[in-house]
Image 1: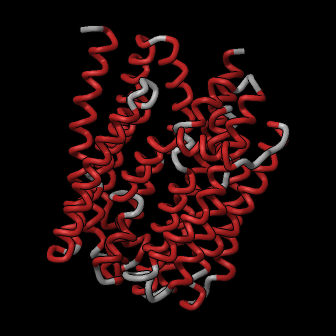
Image 2 (image 1 turned 90 degrees about the horizontal axis):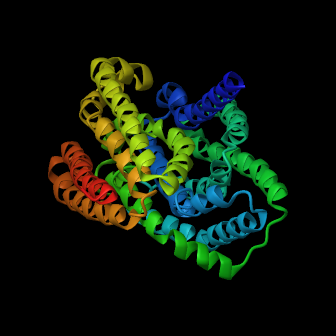
Length: 415
């Protein structure tokens, strides 16, 4: 029986990771094709639009995967409570859509997207299509295998359609538009399954408000940290020439994809961390130690491989005309091990021990530093200024999270 369960769990992990691989790397798998068809200035605008879309998706998700999903994970045997949480989250997401549209309108006033506003609006459509996906529900009830199977088919469809229809520079908008289309298919199919399981959906302004109120702290954490991570290329596009955005954005896209490999692991492990800490702090801290080793080894491995193969990776992915991206890739690789450890300290210590507010305060502080450095250094140092603005906050967050984790650990055992 144990052997059967092991294989079931292993298969589930493989499916989840394969889905994430296609979600994170389908764009990169197509990059060798895109960059040889699309001009540098348009490519820079596409990268800025993609960064905007991912940030808007985070805005629409509003941290529910961390906040409300915890309650669903704990109360999943009570269908009435689960339905209440689901209705609240969906109502909140619908209430946030007008804000998504307003942010999109503001994004096309200056910078890389001002000359191609259609890219920004397709990014908005993509954000709504993916942001309404109920991944948080399947994460909480630990059915990510089924969700991931649907997602895999959606990403394969995206790759296929891209290869068929994107053939000229004028087709560049389809890079984002097809993501919106295929993400919408995933959301519709998974939403329907969720609705059948919970016994129907009821939209309510009141329940939406309560969900927004519950998720504000953790959403603040996600949105603030994303300003110097996910949204960094978009912000860079407000201050730098679009051609430089393309060169820097290539490296940033690779790093974000590498860091994002931890996302499905978090989806699998976060509910477990919450449950273990709720029953025993001793078991909880034992779990954290194992996670630190796992994530630490992952971060250092990516760093070493990346430093050794940076030139080859850039040449294969983007071609000779983007050889300048190697410089940025090597420096940004330093982010990976620090982000890996910070992920454990934030998601598997701060959240399950009810210290999310401390976590948010730390990232608010380092994000303000990052934004300050970005606006001070980029105008003069260009891409090198961007490197400093990206590395400094993550290293500072590592120091602060480590100090507070040690303090929480001592308090748990009254040392």
